[in-house]
Each structure stands twice: as structure tokens, then as C-alpha cells.
Image (cartoon, rainbow, N blue to C red):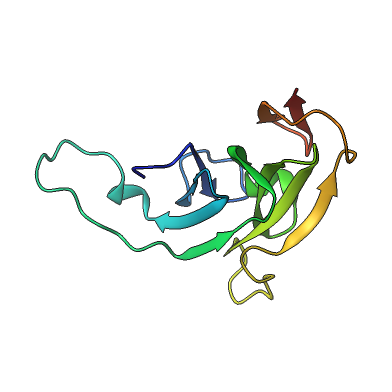
Length: 144
């Protein structure tokens, strides 16, 4: 995660147990490059000290026109899509919802990683400076 301007983490689980499901981690760099990893819960954290592991990302793509400074993963229980999506701030003032390629459903027809699923906002608005998902509804709060 060295060199990343943003890191976002969610659980890949749609039920009520907040401690269930694999971790999904996404990072964003200033050039719009997004990397996505998945980890079983036991692989994150712990008390072991030693050499850091280098782990290859599950998916890597570039979001065109991204500011490179703001992004948030949407928890799958909010989106209701079966696919984990990523909100990325755009230089034209809009927010793009991007497919990560990670799904909560086994063998689902997930869109290709990096596919723009939706565009929210209006072109020409001031660029988003902060974002946060509502804790219980599919609503993204954007600070400009």
C-alpha cells in the first residue's frame, strides 16, 4: 500500500454478522490506478512481527479522469448488487461507481474490473473532497 493516496476496507458479506466474510481492500494512487485484494479474516492483523509479505493484487485497473485522491468501497450489504463497487471521485466533479471484480455471489457474472457502472453528480461541479457511505442505506455523502 506504499504510494497509495487512499485505502478502503470492507467485508465481503451481506448478512448481519459484522465479523463474517473475507476482507476486501482497495487502494488508489494519484494516477487513478486502483488495486483490489481479498484476504481471509485470519490473514489480517495478529501479533506476529517479521518480514512483510508482498501479496499480488486480485485486480488492478486505471480509472480514467480520477482525481487520485478520493475513493470508497461500498459494503455489499448496502449495494444489493452482489458485486462490490467502488466510488471514485472524478476531475469533472462527478463520482463514478466502478466494478471491482469481487462478488459476494459464487460464480456470478460480475462486470470486468474497472467497468464504470454508474456516474453520479453533474459535469462541471466542484470536485469531491470527501466521501462516506451511509451506514444502512445505499446513499453516498459527498463533501465538496
